[in-house]
Length: 399
Image 1 (tube, helix red, strand yellow):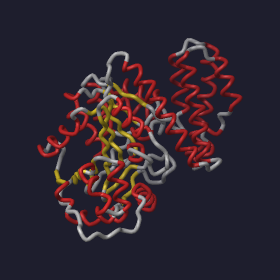
Image 2 (tube, helix red, strand yellow; image 1 turned 120 degrees about the horizontal axis):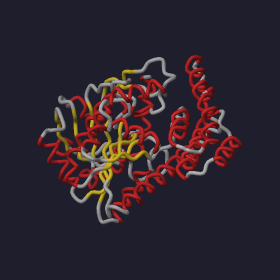
Image 3 (cartoon, one colour; image 1 turned 120 degrees about the vertical axis):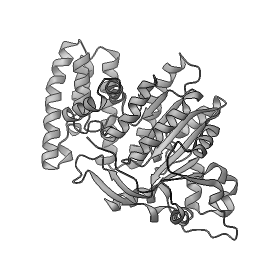
Image 4 (cartoon, helix red, strand yellow; image 1 turned 30 degrees about the horizontal axis):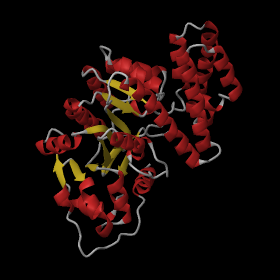
C-alpha cells in the first residue's frame, strides 16, 4: 500500500529535476502553522479569500479524517458568505441517501445499517467522520449535491432505490430480480476476491435498453442512464485500457451533473455558491494530471463570468494512516509516507513543521514562480490556491 500512496503523490506533483536559483524564496513568509482550524490566523486568512467567491474546492487525499474536519470548518466559516451547498464525490442517488440519513435522529446508526445492507456502495463516505460533516450541513439547512458517476458496486443500491420509489409494477418486478443478482454477484466477488464477478460486468446494452423500455418516470430513466454511463466509464479503465477516455468521459459527466443541479438552484438563487469535497485531482484549475479540464476548471471559469472567483485547496497528509476505500483490499487501513514525493521546495519545509497543520498561500507565490521554483512546484502553484499539509494524519473511522 505504501507504493500505491507514493505513486499517487508522485503523479499529483509530476516531479521533475529541481531548478536551482540564486534567490531562494523563503516560504515561511507565505505560510503559517496551526493546531486546529479555529486558530485566528487561519480564520482571518480564510475569510479574506472567501470574499466575493462563488466556489470552494477541497481537493483531498482520500481516507484521512482531517479532510472532513477541514471541510467542516470551511463550511462553517463560509456561512456568512452565502455558502449552503456541499458537493461530494458520489452520484445523485447516494447524495440523496446520505441527506436522508444525515437528517434522521440517528445518522451514524442509520448509515451503518445502509452499509450493512449494501457494503461499499458509497465507498468514500462509509465512516463516522464524514457524517459529522453531513449532519452539520443538514443542521444548517444546507443541501448535498452528488455529481460523480455511480460507483461500480452501487447497482444494488440504485436498483433498490427505484424499487422503493416507483409505482411502475413491471419495472419494479424486473429490478427486484436484478437486485438479487447484483447482491449475489457482490457477495461472490468479495468471497472469492474476483472483482470481475460484480454486477457491472453482467449489465449489458440489451438489458439496459429493456429497462428503459419499461421505465416511464423521468427520474427512473435518468438513474438508468447514469448506470449505463458508469458502465462505459469503467470499461475504458478496466477493459479497453483507454485511460484518457476514462478520465475525460467522467469529467464531462461531472460537469453535466453539476450543471443540472446548478441551473435548478439558479432558478431560486441568482448566484448559487458551492463547496466541493473531491479527490485532489478534481480540484485543480487548468489541465490536471490526467490531462483533462475537470469540473474544477469549469467552475473557476463560471465564477469569473459571474464576476467572482473560486478558491482551490489541496489537503494532503505528510505521514500517517489512511482508510482504503476498496472492498477487495486485505487491509482497511494502510500507513503512508508522502514526504519524499513532494517537490523539493516542500521537502525542505517538512522538517520545520511542528504543528498539526501547515498552510501555504500558493496564490501569492505565482508572481515569483517562473524564476525561482521547480517545474513540479509550479504545477501546484498554478493549479491550487492553498496547500494544507497534515502531520500524522489519521484514517477515518470506517463502519
